[in-house]
Length: 235
Image 1 (cartoon, helix red, strand yellow):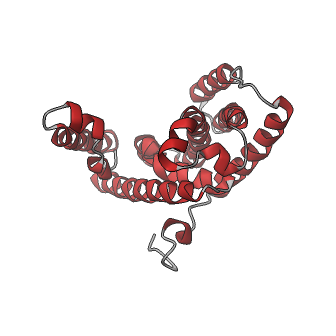
Image 2 (spheres, rainbow, N blue to C red):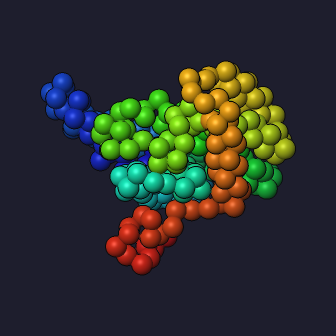
Image 3 (cartoon, rainbow, N blue to C red):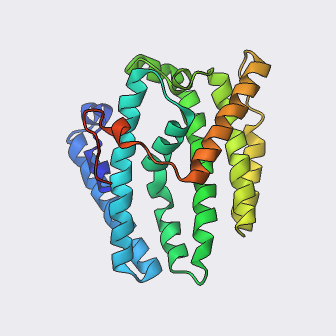
């Protein structure tokens, strides 16, 4: 869990809990320390754990900042959306990444990360579809409109990405993960919103294809996207 999480202090928590902000910070620090210790215990490599932790924290910061800036503009391309989600949520896969790097066959790391990224972006697409109304109220735009599609199309993107994640996991030898992803993709494929079914499906196919291509290429957020006022930002 990135150390930047200690910066999160929910106004609702502050308003409803005495010392709410300090409680959030304290809890985040406890989780952070346990996260670090678990990776060290699982791998036996403190340096590796610290390296992955530092990278995950930096990516989380980059992703959340880019998300705020880009959504405020009301326009976003699918590959940039994929890069933002990968940066913002990549820390979730850090423990598995650490274990695979010290395993007997570290070559399995790449297919795992690709499958995991496809799954996370699919999951985020669902979350962003659910939060569309709230995002419009708080940020002036929602992800679906920024991508140039309907919320119904964004819902249809999710099972396509999760299905591709299942195929990628299976090809990489992660059979249990693949079966779980298949089941999840099948479950959410039944979710539909009223609207132009054909148009939503065509948009979803195009967006999912662009996202998958970006993930396979390992596309990152362009530096100019993260901090528009600078020509470059150190990675």
